[in-house]
Amino acid sequence: MASSSAVGKLSREEFRRQKDLDAARKAGTAPAALDEEGKPINPHIPQYISQAPWYLDTGAPSLSHQRRAEDSEPSNLDAWYDRGATAGPAAKKYRKGACENCGAITHKKKDCLERPRKKGAKFTNKNIKADEVIQNVELGYAAKRDRWNGYNSADHKKIYAEYAAVEAARQKLREEEIDNQTTTDLAAVRKMAKAGKTEKKEDADFGSSDEEDADEDKYADAADAVGQKLDAKTRITVRNLRIREDTAKYLINLDPSSAYYDPKTRSMRDAPDKDVPAEDAKFAGENFFRSSGEAPAVQQLQLFAWQAAARGNDVHLNANPTQGELLHQEFKEKRQELKESTKGSILAKYGGEEYLQAAPRELRQGQTEDYVEYTRTGQVIKGRERAKARSKYPEDVYVNNHTSVWGSWYDVSSGTWGYSCCHSSVHLSYCSGEAGIVATEASNAQNLLSAPPEPGAQSLGIPPSKTEASHENVEQNYSKKRMGEGDFKLDKDRLAQALKEEKKRSRADEEDDRSGKRQKGVASGSHDVTEEELEAYRMRRRITEDPMANYVDGDD
Image 1 (cartoon, rainbow, N blue to C red):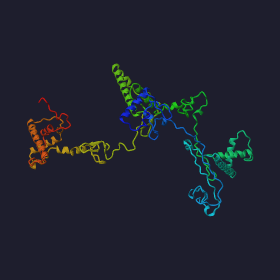
Image 2 (image 1 turned 180 degrees about the vertical axis):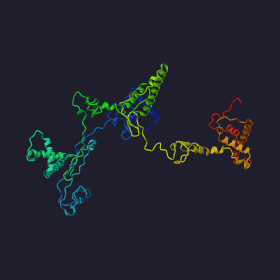
Image 3 (image 1 turned 30 degrees about the vertical axis):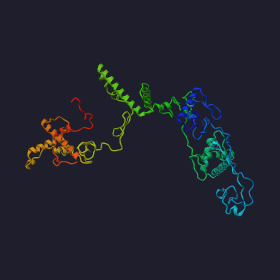
Image 4 (image 1 turned 180 degrees about the horizontal axis):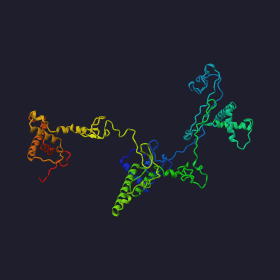
């Protein structure tokens, strides 16, 4: 397949012959293909390796595109432009086409790096600069990316000399400041000098010997330390350094037989001072921190994940920590339930539950060493009982004579919230107690419709039969029987009549849908629906979601 790149679009016969030739080469019956250098090409090399891309295809079988190209000339990493090189002496007169500013012919006026002159060399013919050497430096891959290529180390001497001059000026300013200090300041410097010279003999007059002059310079530098004194006139540079006052772990106890310190991880697991309690020590060891706080809970969770994975469960703490936390919580609850059931079965079999229900140890002994901190109102802040977290919003605040908070009751009929003590759905209303509950129930729409007729109904000429019928209709419409709930009885004759009327109505609706017109004889008014008519509608209704709706028994 090495020659497939050299061949264009093959015909079916040529493609078959190419396949047979490749198979013969792989079997060893045909000689292998040769590349440009005469080297045989392994026929077992895949096509995606042996086939050259279109921009490297030479038209012949080859593997040169897979080999690294050899550089004819090794690139010089130190090759750089010769700065300031000139092509001979400067010209005497201005030449046509040269720079109008400096007179060099190698660049134009807009590219000139000389200071713009008031009158250029074109008009004065004076101070004409020499021509620069146009260099063409070819850089290789590494030379282009060398950030120090072209750097001249001699340039650093100028920076060093500048810093040395600044430091000398700073030292001179400090000496002048010490000479001009008052007696109080001199006493402070004298005190600092005496602290450093404990074994040396001191003179009576401060600053009288050469040794004390050197000490003055020494402690003057200490007086200008970071964060102590800042004078904008004498301070030239400010070093922003962080002062660390904490002691390193390996310097707490210098005994070689004490706790081992790992310099690679900077950890010390054991306490360096065994005699000092962990609560009072500066550093109690890494193991002390691992056994405090939430670290033991994390270790138990990790142990549970390992044990569950060993039993075949797909639990991984790092991949899915939420799942591991939930399974661990469920495991602890089941273990507690099993422990309680085992304890209950043992007590039921052998008895002795009365011995376990003893008074607490604090009540029996009358004293305890458990530290508990209370507030002035008697609430626990710190101790055995954990204080409940309170919200920033006021809780259990009852207003307007209410005994419950707003939102403790929900009215299903109106879909509003209210107070459970008086069933009032008006926020910040005054509580009316049980009377409000009775009034709310009486004002409900269902109760108003199902209420008995008033005595004045008969005086208006309404017969009692109509009143009773309306009461039955209201009870029927708002009772559970309307939704098919509860127990109710149907009249068979009325149900048969309702089925006939429902059949006629559905047939009339189909004819109206077919013709697009509604018959004038069909009554469009509303009337009370009976249970028999509702049951007939349910029986005749077509349920499209029912999979057995179109089922027809073949035996019939």
